[in-house]
Length: 381
Figure 1 (cartoon, rainbow, N blue to C red):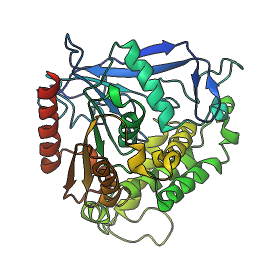
Figure 2: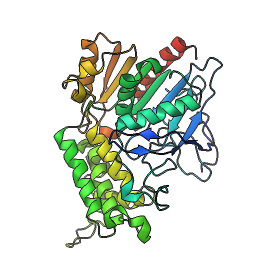
Figure 3: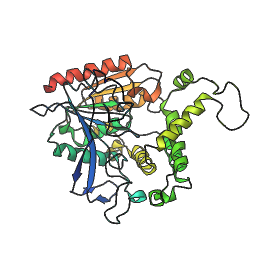
Figure 4: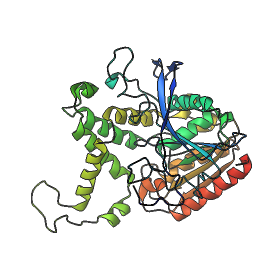
């Protein structure tokens, strides 16, 4: 915990949770008889309830987007962009961020108790889709008394959710902010996800996804999956600038232990991830990424999927993001323009790769801030 909170921090945050008794039918054909959603809020909801912003997390994120929990050394994952005077200005907006279904940070997921068996769901938890998440988020909005979001906002997998919101509930979102995302995954991206899943499922401690019943976790497989993923989130330039070919001990060891600083970094990232994430959740999140393809039901025409509603858009990409390249963002922009939709597009020069969307890069922050300030004036925030 910092000795003194920054002036632009939302401060100390206590997560909230709501229980939903009405069954939720999922795209896979199964039904959750009930579910919980854990979420956080920042800033005040105005009397007109017109200033609410929904923030959606990426693959390894959760509901803790900003501020500090008691004992935290670091703030929430998007603290760079949420807070007083930041792009998502909590002096003007009321921000909601929830942990998605299938998550491992409070919302119903594989670690939750299956009411039919009395044991953890584990491998029995149903595969969920981006559209399932959006439906559950709409129910959360209903319970919170929010009929229309000023904006739905997300980066990476969160950006895909923002796009899905604009398709499924166009009258419930004034604006959609889609950052470092894509209209569907490429074969290469699906391939990366499959290698990560195989690393987890081939771990001897995976036990067919029922490792919780054995009191173990597939730590080696989950760590490998995270190491692979982390490489794809950074650009070659970013990794070169951070590590180069620096040796950890100043000399080669001529064995298979750590020689290079980049190896040490990736092993640390993998091992630390095991302590804060669930392997079954990782499988679910990567499948949701793979399955996302809103154009599929419209003859592979994204423009047709985006035909409804009057949602306006901000689409942002980063030049060095090779996992969700600017070309993929431009596909979204082209489809919107084909439907005469209002869209602002910004391609940010940045060397950090996919993770750039999490960082307070000046040009990115300026674009994001200008758009959100204009939006605040439109909705009376």
